[in-house]
Length: 84
View 1: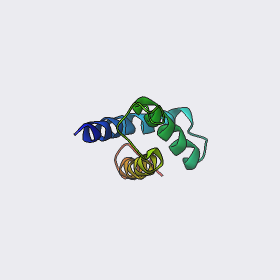
View 2: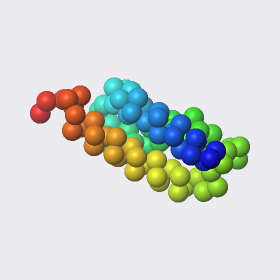
View 3: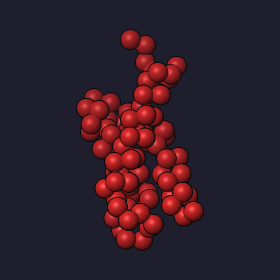
C-alpha cells in the first residue's frame, strides 16, 4: 500500500512539471526536458536516499519515464499544444 501511495504521489507531479520545464527549457531537446522532469520527480520522491519503499530505483525511474512520455503525448494532442 505504501508503494501505491508513492507511485501516485510521483505521477501527480508530472503534468505540472512537464508544463513548467517546457516553459523553462523550451529550446532544449525533448530528452533534456524529460531528464529534468525525471530528476525533479525522483528528488521529490526521495529516490536513491534509501528512505523509501522503492527497491529498484532504476526500474522505478524507467516507469516514470514512460509516464512522462505519455503525459507529453496527451498534452501535445490537447488544446494546450501550440498550433502548428
